[in-house]
Amino acid sequence: MQWDVVIGLEIHVQLATKTKIFSGSSTAYGAEPNTQASAVDLAMPGTLPVPNEQAFRYAVMFGLAVDAEIARRSVFERKNYFYPDLPKGYQTTQLERPIVGPGHVDIALADGTIKRIRIHHAHLEEDAGKSLHEDFHGMTGIDLNRAGTPLIEVVTEPDMRSSEEAVAFARKLHGLVTSLGICDGNMSEGSLRFDVNVSVRPQGREELGTRTETKNLNSFRFMEQAIHQEVGRQIDILEDGGTIVQETRLYNGDTNVSRSMRSKEEANDYRYFPCPDLLPVEIDDAFIEDARRCLPELPDARKHRFKEQYGLNDYDAGLLSSESKLAAFFEDTVRHGKDAKLAANWIQGEFSARLNAEDKQVTESPISAEQLGGLVIRIADNTVSSAGAKKVFEALWSGEAGNADDVIEAKGLKQVSDTGELEKLVDQVLAEMPEQIAQYQEADEKKRKKLMGGFMGPLMKASKGQGNPKLFNEILQRKLGD
Image (tube, rainbow, N blue to C red; front, side, top):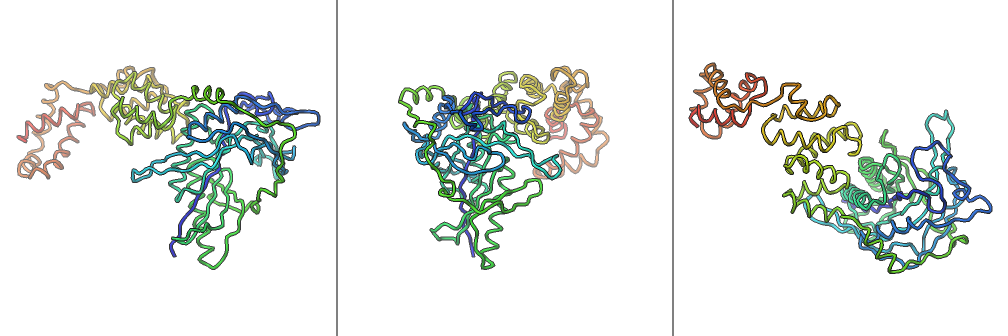
């Protein structure tokens, strides 16, 4: 039997406000456990919440960016449940009247087509604390610093049909909220967390299958793996004649193992009721227009500009415009290095590969845009070869020198482009390769291209890797009578 996969996402976007949604406590990450949880955050008797206006502005900015309806009147409810990291016993959230209504995000698929993913709504709520299981020898530590941090929870329609589509949407949303400046997007710190709802159904059937929810995925790779695993698990159960249980599951990316956490609750299990301590929040057109004026350049507009301004193709422009910090690094590199295409190649190649290998953010790069731009200039003017440029990059990454010129000078990496000197090397090498010359001259055009590489190797060795390959090739073709 063939199966259709149906995926919807719930995304917790931690807002980058300085203080919490209902108190003046700091939201700064990394403080000592339980030093940033006030009496208001814990709902101690006699305390009252006071809404954070900036959280509402950020929510409205998000709504405008996804072309969503903005509610002029939104209401907070209490969602009642008890976990160790939510000792107040309820979460203040929005259910019936969220601040952001239906919207959409368009994603690009692998075949180049655009697919629209509908957003059902996005609501404001407070985050819970965090349970810590490491280093407690069979016990659990509770850190309540995160309790009360403002979130918007973005809920999509079940419009995605593969893990690739889900990851494409997740990446697009990450780029959107970081470009807006409403979230730092640091997934390892929990700033952006994804809950994935997955179901399968026989191909062609309209009725949705029973779904499961996999909670708190904090990397795109883990999301893809978790979806693949859950789809396979559900299909195996159904093909063996079993039934899917609606439940909440956890996925461990380090071990690639998922397990059942609890049966899936319905809304009535949480006993929602209007929060007695918070009045309905009303916003007017002036507030919305003020938020609209705060909107920066968004990824789709930036992609279009990169294509027009820098002459990049659709693929390069899409990658470099997707994240605001990467886009800014690229533009700074071009500002210093002039050659946009060459800068794009190095940022997407060597630079991004090293960041990924060392699990670093763009802002943590040991190489500045000015340094990379300086290297781009020296590649473009043939001062250094491609192989030499990689050595310069390594030296700059490890902090050996201040700029590309210093490294080229110190390591003797300057490329030889003196045609007279290169001709002498070509003559010396060809004098030792009469058989290869004969083979080349007797070969057809297609074979000659392959045989040319046999001359280039000895030439680069003779020049100690510093000969200009392009000039070597021109001289060879002239000498060999091509």
